[in-house]
Amino acid sequence: MNEQQFPRPWDKLDSEAGPRLPLGMQVRYDQLRNPRNGVERRALVIETGEWVNVVAVTAAERIVVVRQYRFGLGQVSTEIPGGLVDPGEQHGVAAARELLEETGYTSANWHYLGAVAANPAFLTNYCHQWLARDVQQTAPPSYEEGEDIVVATLTLDELGAEIRAGHFRHSLALLALAQVYDIRPLMGTLP
Image (cartoon, rainbow, N blue to C red):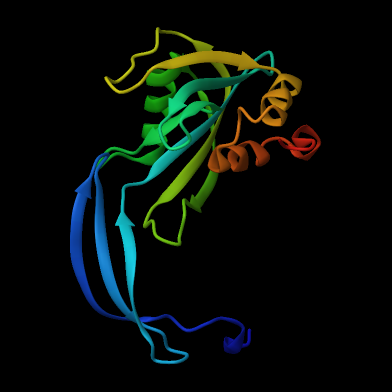
């Protein structure tokens, strides 16, 4: 492959810590030099732990979703279960834990779908995506203090209606679903 097809990495000249944020996030400011023209730039980087998302499907092919208020959008969002990987925890263990905590569902049929960079423009982490088949609700959900979640199961058509209505917009959750289902016909014309 021709090396000219990719830009060169930028040189890191300095780095300083910024404020700590909730959810274990740490702001960092990197002083970088553009290798193309030598211009220096201060870049914002947010160091954060890994995340997981779970596409959870019942034996009847219903998709488990969670509905919760999202501060960034200021509205209720329909999503798939997911959350933070605790320090030292394996992401597969975190996926099973998050599914159980948020929904009360469990599964013995897990498949790893891969990982994606959450937002490489300024985040340092990856989101690991898992498929849990034949899920069953075996316990009540166990919410953290900052969570207020409603659990539902949807058919693929009902999920499409949620997407088209603008209730299901989480990009990482949509990407995980797209690894299991062809969601293009479900998208329609988004509001």
